[in-house]
Length: 90
Image 1 (cartoon, one colour):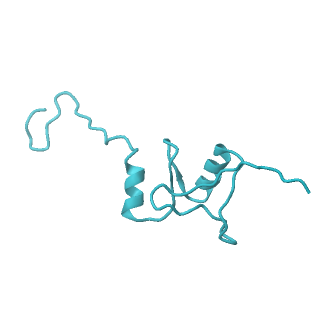
Image 2 (cartoon, rainbow, N blue to C red; image 1 turned 120 degrees about the vertical axis):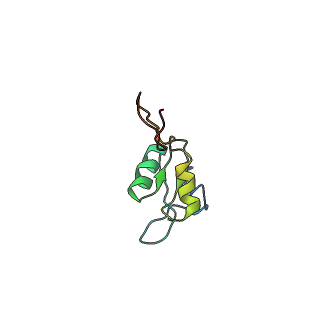
Image 3 (cartoon, helix red, strand yellow; image 1 turned 60 degrees about the horizontal axis):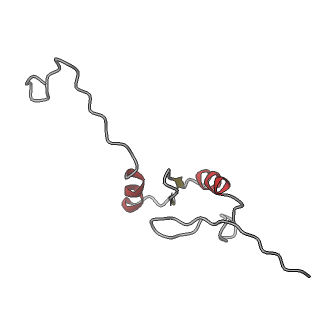
């Protein structure tokens, strides 16, 4: 019987290092491409971040901070003539 080499990808959380596993048997999932890995991770409620990091669905502050780092800053809109919160002119 010949041996064959196969290359595949696995996904681990960039915050805690836990692997993306099959819900049924707990075995790490293997993927043929990055796109398939991102799609499955997202379907399993993992965050596939734009910088190629993955964050699992653990809902603690450390995981949320990793996601928040990539969010743009809150917009500030100040219309001409609008008063500041203290009542002064902008």
